[in-house]
Amino acid sequence: MAAGDLPALILVADEHADVLVGEFERYVRDYEVHAVGTAREAEELAVRLRDSGVQVAMFVAESRLPDMWVVEAFARWRLVVPTARRLVVAHVSHFLEDAPPLRPMMAKGKFDAYLLMPRGRRDEEFHHAVTELLSDWGWTAAAPEVETVRIVAPAVDPLTAAIRDFCDRMGMPHGIHAPDSDVGRSLVARLPGGVAPSYPVVETLDERVLVAGSVRDVALALFGRPETIDLQEVVDLAVVGAGPAGLAAAVYGASEGLSTVVVEAEAIGGQAGTSSMIRNYLGFPRGISGMRLAQRARNQAIRFGTQFFAGWEATALVPGADGAPHVVQTDGGAVRARAVVIACGVSYRRLGVRGVDDLVGNGVFYGSAMTAAREMEGYDAVVVGGGNSAGQAALHLARFARSVTILVRRPHLAETMSRYLVDEIHYNPVITVEGCAEVVDGGSGGEGRLSWIDVRDTRTGEVARREAQGLFLLLGAEPRCDWLPPELAVDERGFVLTGRDVPKHLWSDGRPPANLATTVPGVFAAGDVRAGSMKRVAAASGEGSSVVPLVHDWLAPAPD
Image (cartoon, helix red, strand yellow):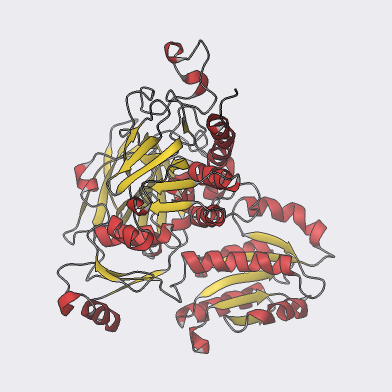
C-alpha cells in the first residue's frame, strides 16, 4: 500500500506533544501519523486530508489545548470527519482535575474515550484502547483491506444487500464487484461454462464460487448443514438460536462437559448482532458492537467444543417420549438431543405498508443494516423505533448521513430507551427526534430505490411527505414460535411461558416448572423469546448461562 493510501491519525497536543508522538510511532506502518499543536491546525489538516481523499481514522487530543476547550474542538472536527474516532488523553498532572468536566461530555457522546497518557514504555492497556477504537473504525467506516467473501453483482438488489448484511453480522469482510470488473470476470469464469446464469455470484472463504439464490446458500457454503451431524449421535444439548442467550447457553453448557449443538436460522448474534455499538454491556467501558460480542462468544463456545450450524431455521420440535430424545427438525436435517434450549429470539415487526415493504433492500431495511449505513453519506435517513436498537442505529447512521430523523409513536424517547442513548442523541447535531409520528407510505422516484416517505402526526392526523433515501425500521419484537409443538405453552402474543408464568392447570404435581423450564420436560427457554424477559443483551446472556444448571439437573440420572 502506498503511503498516500494509508488512513490518518491526527495527534493534537502542545504541552506534551513529544510523549504522544513517541507513543504513536508504533502505528506508522499502517497509518499516516500527523502531529499538530492547536485545534485549528488540526481542523485545517483534516480538511486538506479529506479533500485529497485520505480517510481520517482518529483524532487524539491532549485534554488541554492552547486555543479552545477540547470538547469544542471535537465538535468542529466532527463536522469535517464525522466517522473518525475521538480520543482524549490527559497527562498525569491534569488527569484528575480534567476528569470531572470531561466525563459527562463522554457520556453524551462528545468523544469516545478518556485515557491517562502513558508514563513509560509498553503501556499496553493504553494501546489496547487505541487499537479497539481503530478496529471499530476499520470495521464500520473503512473499506476492508482483505475480502474474505467477494460478491459479483451488477447492482445492489435486495438479495445482494441481504448477503452483505449477513457477512457484516458474521464478521466477514467483503466486497462487491461489477461483472465487467477484473474480479467479476475472474470469478464468473470459474463457474461451470464460464457464464453466470444469474447474480449475485459469491466467492466464499475457501475460494468456492457459487450462484447465490438466497442468503441460506451462502451460509451453507460457509458453515455446512445440520445433516452433516452423525444422526446416530444424540447430543446432550441442542440450542435453537445464536443470539446472546443461545451463545451463553452454548458457552456454559459446552464448558461443563455437555455435547452441544447450536442451530441458527440467520447470522450468529441474532438481533443483537445488528447493533453497531452497545455501550452498557458489563466489562466493555468503550462499548462493543453486537457483531464483535457475538463472534467472541461464538469463538469461546467453539473452543469448548460447541458445533454451530448457521442458515437453517428450525421447522419443528418433536418432544421425546418415554426417555427418547427430543428432535429439532430443519429443512437440512435433524438434531436429536436430550435437552433443548429455545433461544430463537424475536424478529422486527413488519410495517405492513406495501409501498415501503416492496422496497426492502432498496433503501428500506429492517434492522440497522451496517453496510447500508455506510452508503448513506450525503443522504437523509429515517429510523423508526424507540428502543435501544433504534437509538444505536441512529447514532451509527449519524456518522455517514446528512441527516437522521428518529420517528417514534410515543411523545418522547425516554420511556423506552436507555438514558445514555437519549443523551447522546440529544447532543448529536445530525439527529432529530419526532414524537407522535408514524410512516404511512413510501415509494421510489422511478429508479427502484426509496426516495420519499409519508409521515402522519398521530395527534392531528396530518400527513406530510418528505425526502428519504434510507428507512431503517426497528419496530419491536415478534416471537419466532410457530414451529413449536402444541404441548409447549405460549402466551397470547406467542412468547414461550416458563416457570410460574405457566398456567396452574399445566403444573406437574401442583408445582410450577423451574424458572426457565417450559411445559415440555427437558425443554427450556431463554432470552427474548421467553415471556417476561427484559429484552436486554445482558439479561439474555444471564438467562442463557442460568439455564445450564437446569439442563444438568434434567440430565442427571434419577437416584436409586
